[in-house]
Image (cartoon, rainbow, N blue to C red; front, side, top):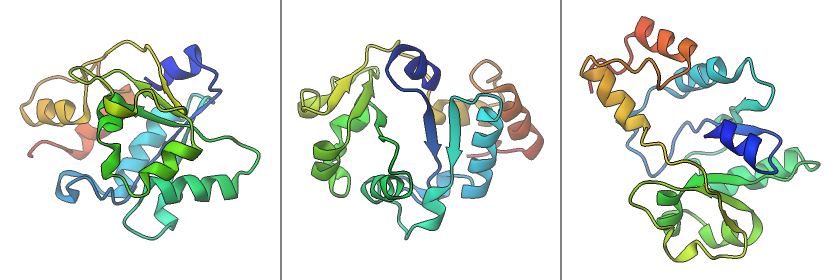
Length: 173
């Protein structure tokens, strides 16, 4: 999806911000922040259009997107930050801390997700619906496939797949 955005929108690069503590996710289902950052680094290290970021490792927990965006803007004032999210996240953005601030101050690029319609925010002034191809792949689907012993070879960057296999990640959920 990241490649689609740099190739088909005005975005020059995509930053992958690894969150040590997403308040909307069960922490027990996640690997450690360091392990996830390592795998993101493996996935993006050979492509200058992509960058991994541990910026949330240095912010108070839990991690809130509104705080991360403000911090990024302060640290990199020459850059304009855009939030990329799936349509399903846009539908539930009201659960996010200071969601109205995000909607009012940051462009949000939204990619389609099966079964989603963007909800009431799809026509908000700073929301841009991007007609990206729908790919029915999710982190949950990948973790469940690994736990069931099924191949995920074509769903992951080869270095990430190798790391997951070597470390035995997700063998049991």
